Length: 463
Image (cartoon, rainbow, N blue to C red; front, side, top):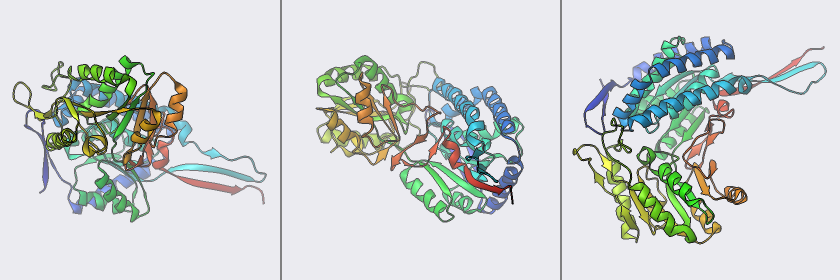
């Protein structure tokens, strides 16, 4: 029987071993989930909200265990994992608060002799193929809205963080959800394709690589079902000449290096106006040097190890390319261990004198604690460079001039545009992207569109 193991990226120890779902088990799995959906879709919106509130209560009770498992599986510092639990509950409750209005029947203007309205019906079984870097937040974006809309959910979490998928299923079970309403599985790509092929599945959400997104989208297209894709980013920031430099430096360094840079919406490239470039670089370097690598369960650790075994070498190759093309590596830039000799860390790296000939550093996704800083002469040059990427998840500007932010934001090819902040997700705004970042959206009232289908009611009341 095929299995997969999860190793602790700090100690190297095996955290868990899980059995992969067999191809012969797919039909039964999906059929059980579909029966749960059929039962659940008959409930009212207040009943669904009440279940999700009980889910939140159970999840919170289990929060310390869940946070510790995140740290053990992918290396996130424990206090940051605790924060992820809190934010998960906030997002869930935000979606619960807007569900009654977002999911209500939409009446049309009165027409004599007719009743007309639009209903938002559940799609059936939702397959959520989730990612490891924010293993709770990525998952809650799909699972809670899907349940609120009347669907059942199969969570196929990344192998790296399989225990997080189980945490969602466990909390819903303990909250009294119908059996098989939320199910966690471990499965290969081939078995996931078989699940997508099942007629009971009405929507697939995938967070991961561009290559993986193409494969999932291809499988969904065989059945004409919607597929939501969030496939990464190379998110840019522009520090304008009128920026509050102290705020910009602190905010940008945190937005670039938090979670060891393993964030789709983390800042990966920074464009700084020439008039403030030197001061920005000096301040940013001082901030980056403050990071402490070490045991992620220790409160003093501010950066954990890289989750994936091959990540340090990939990042080192990007640094080597940048150095060979004239980049100045001011700090870090190589795979390291901590003082005890443990962990697959990457020494946080800041590269200046960057340009777009350094393809790995400034164009391709890095997904690690490495940032390139490039000097620009004006707003127009900043806009041109910010758009020079195959991705478009978020982008940000630091300026005191809101009109400048409006003007530049209108020109940037991105899903979310920030002013004086970055690396943040507001659950009342749709989370979406353009270009190779993917398609579709989650969260906000628009996040319910993916997990529902519209049905028109046109009733003649007078004959």
